[in-house]
Length: 311
Image 1 (cartoon, rainbow, N blue to C red):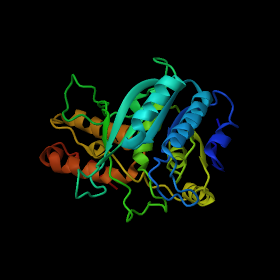
Image 2 (cartoon, rainbow, N blue to C red):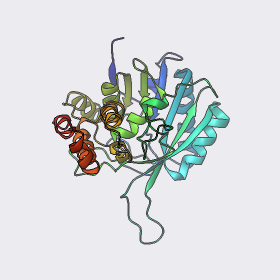
Image 3 (cartoon, helix red, strand yellow):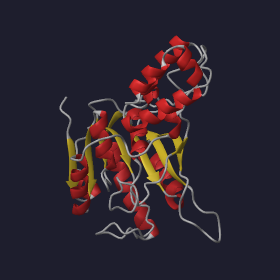
């Protein structure tokens, strides 16, 4: 199947209405939170009921375009997340799967009240049991090497730690709410297959299409700001050296990798399983292996091979 990456400039609801029924496998999106953010040509400030009506309209369109085993991930701020949950479950008729917490280490500071350090992501499916979920594609490394463990890795859980896209980051775009690529990587790998079509009706800086590009999915993104569409297309044409963020656990080296044959096999599998989209993190992982198992690598004459892998 030919991969198609399409960035459409237009109104989210109007452009979604042009899409055929059941034509989308997955929707991952970060809609406006109605917190008066400046998105260039819109100010993200509706009356309370207007915002809920707007949300219900696009969510109903999302349900229509999703195929029967499709899924939806939607970022949402705390002020409206309970209402979005209710719309999805009671009005749209989708099925709740997970409430994901994205924990980040830095955020807005407060002097009265607690400083926010997380965002939330609702994961709903169109069918209660028949939906795509590729757990093997999103596992994280085990803490210990054990013959009884599944060394393909563990379930990452519903609390995800990724750094914010700081303004000094080389991949930071001129967008107020850009999200890390690894967040989208995990959702896209989990809930779609290669060749599937993934939709983001609020494309923003283009993160979804960039991740689709590198994971073998087709993607459709919609945004009403032509500058963001231009930004997205430039991003798609830029060289790829690895996603701009990573769950630090992906570089974790298991303890007790004492058998030389198991160690060598595991190290090669680890790179293939966990770092396929993060070539810039391979060297850090290899250095951690060499530090943790230095004597064992020298004794088994594997140290030189580790040096080769890190080049």
